Image (cartoon, rainbow, N blue to C red; front, top):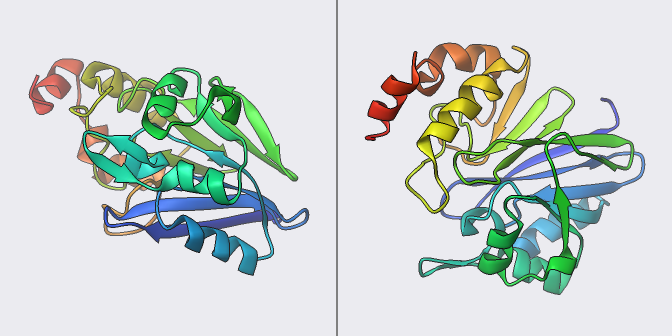
Length: 225
């Protein structure tokens, strides 16, 4: 994908990754999980001569979308919509949670289902529903890249003890959806929690303990259930 504009940006005190994805030809792009340092993110896009056309949200926890939950507040989408309002793409099972946390209105959202695709310029982005960390968690496939939010990290996976978490659903998502993607898939996680910022899924399968649990019963014991 020679036309692909793809930038990984670390932002915030929780080592989050924000992604800018778009087309070098049309100069259009979207931001994935723009929760932190919103003004700086927009400045980076301006320096790159890119026009923001949307925000893609992996899930509704404030460190990925902004807003307030459990006494924790991040500027995120409320700040973005103030500075540069754009459509916000969210999974159908996550929309109500996103509205509650961020205060956005339903008219701000573009509701997506698993397998839906949007084109950012000439670049297709496919939405993959990956519940477990939250009911409407979603990943984004861009060519051979997978932007995974908090579902899968280079080492480890998302927690299941936060609002919306479900350990059994998480196990099925990891083993039946993410672990079955091609070996050459480049994993682009939502946090810099591993030794590298990205990784190749074929190698991650061999080193990430959470992809090697042999059964649901073993998984539930690992999760303390």
